[in-house]
Structures are given as structure tokens and as C-alpha cells.
Length: 283
Image 1 (cartoon, helix red, strand yellow):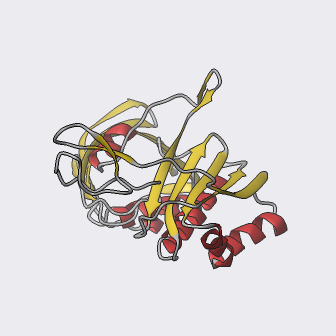
Image 2 (cartoon, rainbow, N blue to C red):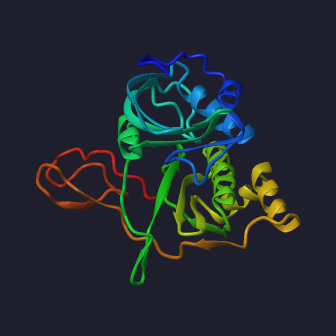
């Protein structure tokens, strides 16, 4: 390998062909080394996410016979989906190192090292560092989708599933994302929140009424996900439920002029005469 730009064929099969049969590759984004078709799929996803992907070799050092360290700079523009995320349109310039083990018959393994946080930040992603648990508290992350309806919620539905692996978790997320997108067009839908804490993935959905909440049962994706749990070896436990809202307090809004707190549900103007800003969503 010479210093300079690595040829940019971006061919997943060529990536496999650069290793001996059974040769492996791993980096911080992979839970374990991959080879063969798994490696081709991983490389293909990367090339789809960064169609203009290129590597610039900064230097190369032979540590001992059969072991080489290559320092490189990755450049590319994220114009395709990356691990389920939509394209950001941002450019990345990421430094990294490959440790390459070779023998007379070719390359046996490659270990890649780079800073995942730097890559995420260059893509405009949030990077939150937190423990899995601390005392009675367990930590996770959440995402929200909202519909056009801004009505007061009359019912809340909760669904959760315990998964047994990262692969199951990713499948549940894929179902949830697609279902949430479909629900935003359903009458009476207000908002959806997906939450991941440990091995439990849950959704909390706000509806205008209990009748509106029943519409989720008619969604093909929902029926498919439930059928999968009950007819296949998928997931460890599941629960669903819907709750009515017997009491809902006022939506209080502070006037930006006089700081008076007013009920935004019954007035659009403060007692001082100031027209109030648009109130936040109920849910």
C-alpha cells in the first residue's frame, strides 16, 4: 500500500477479496469481527451512506513481520441512510488507524480504530454519555413524533417489549419507526414517543380519545409485529394497555411581557393586552 489516496472502487465484493478466505475485519461500530457476506453487507451500507467515500493514507509502519499499522483520513458526504438514520448531508473528515495482519497467502485480519464520538458529532448527531443504571435509576433514550392535531389528549396507550439481543432491538425499532410514521396521518393521533431503557423498548402514544386509540389495531404493521411475537421465537415479554384521562389540568403559559401565568386553553390574550405566543403541545 502506498501513501496517498486509496482507490475508490467502493465494491463490497472487492473488500471481501482483499482478505484470505475466512479473513476478518472489525472496528468500533461492530460488536464482533465480520467476514464474508457480513463484511460485504457492512461495507455496502457504508458505501451507500457515503457514495463519495475515500481514504487518504497518511503513513504506514511495519511493526514486525506480518503486522502493519496504517494511519488514514476518511472523507465523505453523508447522502444516504446510515444505520437507520436519514442522510444528514454533512461532510466528515475522520482520522483513524488500521492494524493489518498478513502472511504469505494474504491479509488475515484487519482491526480498525477511530473515534465514534467525533464521527457522530460531524454528522450532527447527539452524543450523550451516561451509565446503564445508577442505584434505582435506569437510563436510556427517547424519540418523539407528532401529528397535525393539537387537541387535548383524552387517552394514552402504552406498549412495551423486552428484547433478548441487539438484533431483536433493531427490528423492534424498525417496526416502531414505520408505525409511528403511519400513525401521524391517523385522525385523532396526537403524538408518539419511543423509549429505550435497558432491554425494554416502549412506546407511549397520546390520542384525542379512546376510540381514536383503537385505530392502532387496524394498522398492518402493528398486526404484523404482534403476530410475530405470538407465532415466532421473538422477544421475551410484551404488554399493551390504554388509559383514559379522567382529569387534565390547565395548560399554563407565562406572558412574555408581564410574566403573568394564564390558561392558554381558554384565552389567547393576557390581561395586560399582550397576544400570547402559540402554546406548546399538550403531549
